[in-house]
Length: 293
Image (tube, rainbow, N blue to C red):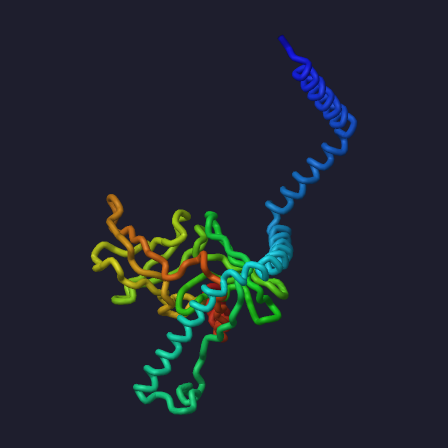
């Protein structure tokens, strides 16, 4: 037996569906137009490099502005971790000063250690206002941009550890591709013997990356340190990536499968340093002219 309550509910549902169909029929031209517009914009952006680049740049600027507002509220809860990072870096700097002081390479004037005509990396501090770690291709948004001297292609580090590379720059913000990105890899080597390979993320655990192209005759030990090789203009040699967590031989291959435990926790990053190599334009122009010849 059907109750009055059930009948009224069914009648109400029938009225809603009837009105919905009437609305769709009455406005089908406008709806079809909007759908075609969305499809057209999608095709234009995805199959034209210029439009894709401009859209990415505009979206990055807009999202960066929103993230900056949001990060003002969340930064308060990261103060403890920020202080820990600053204390760690200050300890490292004090250790270096003490090392050079014991070797007699500095006096009371710190600048005596700088030899004439030397070329140095410049470092610019930036605050992270957005950072993803749970995707296949992760990016980091920084609160510094073109007006602060940030340029595409510059390396991003924290302390002496690799974080990523600047990918896109606006006037006030920049977006860096994270080491936790399956589309990016860097040249790396074993610190103890300089055997080099390539480090890349496999898209799984944010705490680990892979070291590839290390031949089987190379002696490996769990705990060995992996650093940047210096075979690029992005990072100086010796920047820490992590330590060997485990390794084994690929089936039928002549190379190891090496898992690296990252030296930094990407989920706790607040501030980074962007590397500006003054020699970078000259090096790239020379390499470009050589390849063209």
